Image 1: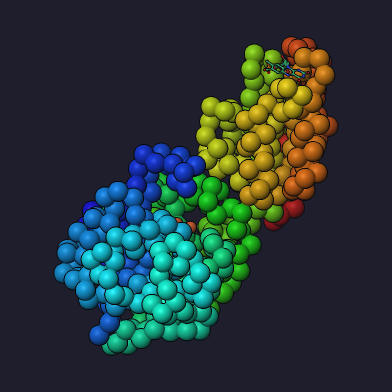
Image 2: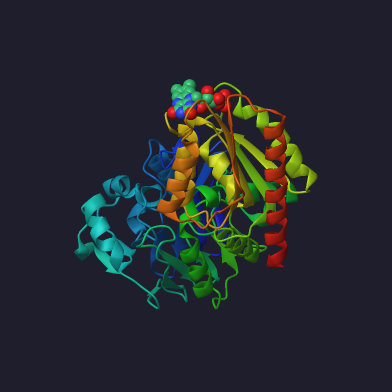
Length: 412
Ligand SMILES: Cc1cc2nc3c(=O)[nH]c(=O)nc-3n(C[C@H](O)[C@H](O)[C@H](O)COP(=O)(O)O)c2cc1C
Ligand SMILES: [Fe+2]
Ligand SMILES: [Fe+2]
């Protein structure tokens, strides 16, 4: 991986991670790039964020110091926008080669610095809204608190000289990157790829924090931003407002209405519930809504949440299992509620053997999380579905699609 120049005096260092579950949980089939930035002033040098401490990664970063003739000894400030170990886990290794440096971070990060790295307050320069750091030669960095994007202590760093915003997790995306990390080097097809990866990143990592994201964007809007250089993904130089607009759109999906889409999530042990899935899809498509289909537990949570994040409607098809919902369905729905997938239009159907119980647990889940989901009358059948059940499933899906279209139309 080569170091690249973001703009005069700012360099992007980066490491790709593949074949891991991000946060120990989310599959990243296309990997992820983790970015770090060297900012050189007239007499001081800072590094903004670091990339994680996984095996081999610190070495990748140190190798990149050499490429731009940066002696680690010359780094005066380590700016920690965010304490999550994917951005600061490397400090442990960095201090082996550079024992004394000043950490620039938020006040709220001070106890975390102690807890994660045993770094005392005496080595920390706390910064908050309106604070600046002069690196010399007109290179003045300004800081803004952007709490809960993604942890409570998060800040963003803005280089006032070049108009470069380094917002860490905000405006990031999944997707490993090789030699072309800038939007001005990419084809439309590649930009589209990163847009899909940004949606997945947002739905999996950022979704729960959508209101803080909107507040952070509002806070940043008066800044003369020319470049957006996030902690993950590509750097936006040609059209930085594209990723800002995309993030506003993703954040607004939280409360809905979202797109003219329905995500069908289904699971089935012996194929009875499964028999209803095809008629359900046909009825939805006949109404002209886009349908995304996922099976639990086969499809990853990451894929399911990505589809559901932009969908105004959901179809949940699952049988009763031990007097409750089919377990992987419960797990996915519980996670969606915790991540605040709000105000969806929903239709549920499924098979049972003798007592049922899936519906009761779904009702309990809704009562607990109160996500504001609006339900079409559910359809349950004993054993295998008959013609009347298929008709009821089609009717439920038609009704759902109509409610989705109406909600989407009310947006514009
Ligand atoms: C492990 C297991 C647990 C079940 N628990 C219940 C139950 O508590 N109540 C009930 O009405 N049916 C229960 N059933 C029956 C299923 O809900 C029924 O067979 C249904 O038709 C399965 O739908 P499927 O073919 O879509 O998997 C259970 C079945 C299995 C295999
Ligand atoms: Fe994070
Ligand atoms: Fe991150």
